[in-house]
Structures are given as C-alpha cells and as structure tokens.
Image 1 (cartoon, rainbow, N blue to C red):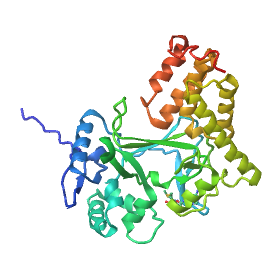
Image 2: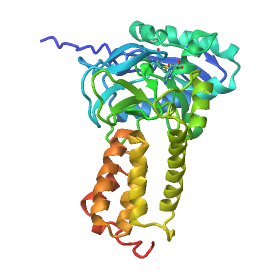
Image 3: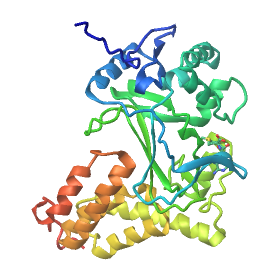
Image 4: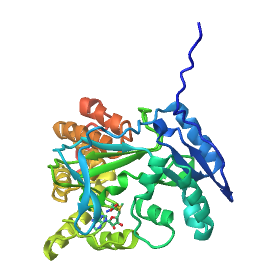
Length: 367
Ligand SMILES: C[S@@+](CC[C@H](N)C(=O)[O-])C[C@H]1O[C@@H](n2cnc3c(N)ncnc32)[C@H](O)[C@@H]1O
C-alpha cells in the first residue's frame, strides 16, 4: 500500500539571511503561527535562540476568533479604535496575537535612518500577503518613511532573552488599533517564550481588567500609569503625538491634584512595605494602599501591590487579609504578566496555607 505523505503547508522554519546591514540581518518565517508568518531584523544569535525556544513551546494559533468581542470603528479625535460589542468581565480574553515583525532595538536606535530603510522595506515585502496588508494599514503619526512611521507609532518593546542583545521592538498589527487611556480597561503582556506553561512564544495577550459594557471603547495604557498627570501628558505628546484627554487627564484642577497626591502616596507606602525592617507597617496602611488603587482605577496594574499587601498582611498575622490578597495577586499576575509568571505560584500557596508560609507573623510587633 502506498503511504500518504501528509504535507503540512505551515511548517515554521526560519529562512535567511536575506540581506544584512552590519550585524543585523533579515530573516523570514512564512510558516510561523499556522502560516500567518513573521519577519525579523536581528542578529544570527537571536534567530538561533528563537529556534531553540520554538522547540520547547507551542505557538498560539493565529486564526482570529470567529466572534471577536469588539468592533473596529472611528473614535472621535483618535482615528480608529476598538469598541466592545458584548459585556466583558475582569479576566476575559480579548485577543492573542503574534508579531508581524521583530526589529533589534540597536538597529532602530543606533543606525542612521538612511541605512535602515532598504532592509525594513525588504522585510515587509517578505510577509505573507494578508499580514503585509494588515501591517501597511496601520497608522503612522510621523512623516517620512512609511514603515519607520508605522513602527514608531505601533511597536512594543520585547525582550527575547539573552541580556541586552535580546531587546527588540515587536509590531502586532491587530493590537495597534487599541487607543491609549491612563486608566485602561484592558491589560496586556507579551510572552517571549519563557512562560512556565510553555504555551506561548512571542504572543501579545490582552485581557479585560474590569466590567466593560457594549459600546465602551477598549483601551490599553501606552505609558507608566504611576507617573503624575503632567509627565503622562508630556510622554503621550512626545512619543505618539497626541494630547491625552482620557478621563484621568481631564479631571478638573483639584481632582487632578488629588490624583497626583494619591500616586505619590502609593509610591511612599509601597516603599515602606518593600522594606522588611520597616517599623511603620500596619493593617491600616495595607487597607489604605488597596483603597488608593481602587480610587485611582488602577485595575490594570495591581499585581505587585496586591502581592505586597498579601505578604505584609501575613507578616502581621492577618490571615484573612493574606488569603484574600494572595488570591487577588495570583489572579492579577496572570492578567498582567501571564500564566506562571513571577510570584503567581507563591501567591497561590500563600492563599492556601498562610500559616505555613515563611512570612507568617514574621512582622508581628512591627507597627
Ligand atoms: C497605536 S495607534 C492607535 C490606533 C489608531 N487610533 C489608529 O487609527 O490606528 C496610536 C495613535 O492613535 C492615536 N491615539 C491613541 N490614543 C489616543 C488618545 N487617547 N487620544 C487621542 N489620540 C490617540 C494617536 O494618533 C496615536 O499616535
């Protein structure tokens, strides 16, 4: 009997180099993520690292969800954006995407633009047609070379591992439609292939952080949520060319000052909580911190605060508080950083058995 060879048209295999500028070369992998494709301008070593990681991880399927929970539409004064078409709850997945292109940070930051353009053009030309079209449809907020402008507006920093040589910019065309809000209703994380569940390589994942009603815009934060308003606004203007008029930035004078004060209070309390020798930590301080996060609507950035509250609560012998915030911290760590990230496992253990944790009552008499 004749054996049939089942041909998988989507074998993920890196090809190249297809041209280099100095140590940076163009590699392409048209079979990546079930034929979605990907290109990279990077060093040979980074491609070797990616190949090694690919052997250990599965790549998230690139097929779009049949029923996305959003519609892409025009938003007043923002260009296009994403609007929820269903009710979403904290923890609900929005999308998971792989990049169209990875570019080594030093290629973009250290080489003169004139030396970058030809390789960037060649890279995009090598993308499979649907992804190339999606890439080129993105907006760029600066004049000049189109691909450079698209990357300037829409690239995320990613670390592929291996120290500073792993620093890259990644572009995810579908993710690029999220507009910015300083108090976003969506959190994101990027897995570079080191996550313990081994389920993702180079994936950008977005998750709802609070209840979102149909018709509400879905937003992420482009910048540091803990910066005061003036610094956030400066960054939005400098890096993305827009004046931030999000609800937090539009607060009237007194309320805006109160928001900035809460942010500095958060920083002060967290400094105290991170110091195991501090004599000032008490339960009121822990409750205060949780309240400040709530007032500031920082649901997209609560994981490390909840971790601190859980650990310090346990040190004070506050079993209920330790359990509650360890559970919340584990949930937030998954939303903000992915499954198996950081202290997630440790927080789950603390939530289960606070009295067996090494921190139990270790700080009684501290405050
Ligand atoms: C990553 S893109 C977001 C999607 C973009 N609106 C589009 O039409 O494709 C970033 C650009 O969107 C616009 N943008 C994002 N957030 C905004 C906001 N909060 N207010 C005004 N413009 C915003 C700015 O022009 C910014 O450079």
